[in-house]
Structures are given as C-alpha cells and as structure tokens.
Length: 140
Image (cartoon, rainbow, N blue to C red; front, side, top):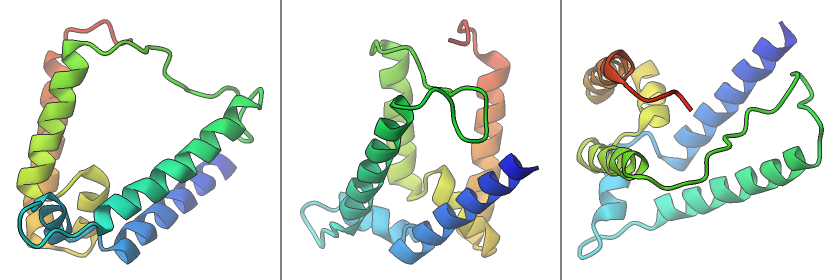
C-alpha cells in the first residue's frame, strides 16, 4: 500500500512539474524544434533539470543495496546501442516532433480533456499494444 501511495505521489509531482513547465502544450515542442524561426529554449532547460535530478537519484541509488520500498533496483543491464534502439529512438523523436507530445505530457493533457490528447493517447496505446503483440525480441 505504501509503495502504491509513493508511486501515485511521484506521478502527481511529475504531472505538476510538466504542467508548470508548460510541457503539456505541443507548441512548446514545436517552438523548441523551430531552430530557424522563433526558437524557444525552455524545453531544453526542463530537460537539463530532469537529467540533473535523475543523475543525482541514480548516484544515490548506486550507493544503496535496495530501494526504500522494494527488494531491488530495476536498472537496465544492457549497454549496447543496436539498430533496434536507434530505430525506436528515431520513431519516438519523429512522433514527438509531429504530434508535439510524448507519453507523460500527453496523459497529463488528457486529464484536462484536451482534444489533441484525446486523439494522441488512444493512438499511443494502440501502438504500444501492437508492439507488444508482434515483438519478437527476447525481452532483455
């Protein structure tokens, strides 16, 4: 129960941060990608802040034997960059640039009943389900 409450609270903090930073507005993404027009660097600042927080949390986690509310950390062990990773990253980037949403901000925006998110989130879920249905990897 406590782990679920902490997870829920973490999600609320994440959602609030996305909303406060304006990341629920697809125009932020488009403005960031508009290098030769009205470039908006605010998305880069949000990313730098997120990377810094994640880096600190990762450094803290590496010094511990186990998480506070779990048996073990779930840290990926694979380190190789393969075609599958590059293709997935490229597909994510193209979708992000075209739609102006990535999964977190899209779900937060859906909670506000935004029409764009009401189209994007179901399409994202269908894409995820299709991937899991047809994925032939070993799951590692």
